[in-house]
Amino acid sequence: MTEPTGKYSITMPRDIAEAARSRSGPSGLSAYVAAAVARQIERDNLNELIQVAEAEHGPITDDEVQALRDQLHQVRRGQAKGGAAA
Image (tube, rainbow, N blue to C red):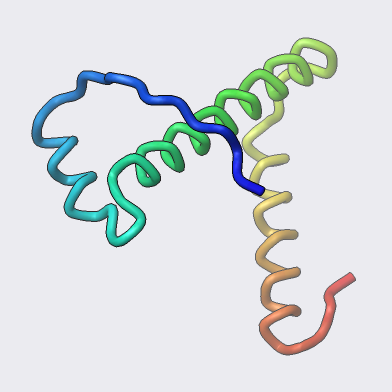
């Protein structure tokens, strides 16, 4: 079952519209733009979540960010080897 759709008129710079149209492929410009807007909404929601968490727990440090990146890379290496990293 697909989501109901609506028709909207938007204005954007011509070069951006043409670049999007050239990349949209068989699904078309509307699907391409809808996917881009959905990704932006996800980012906005994550930023709101970060703001709430930082207000409650304080800002995350660069060291904490790097530690989490290191942990993610370790897990990905383990998955690439065919095993699950703990």
